[in-house]
Length: 72
Image (tube, rainbow, N blue to C red; front, side):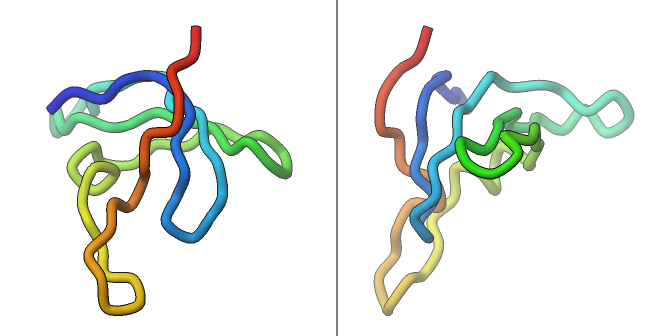
């Protein structure tokens, strides 16, 4: 799986900036590394597969995070 750095919109509406992809040191699971573009601009990680999955919202399958624009 490939994840482009940039701005993404969560299906609930908030914006996030993906910094890149990292590998968990114990499990070797690939993780999306991103920060919030609101509040304290904190840094987060989430399993890459979960970041890229679709979820159900109001009866429709939608991307959990939708790519908006590239950065850097």
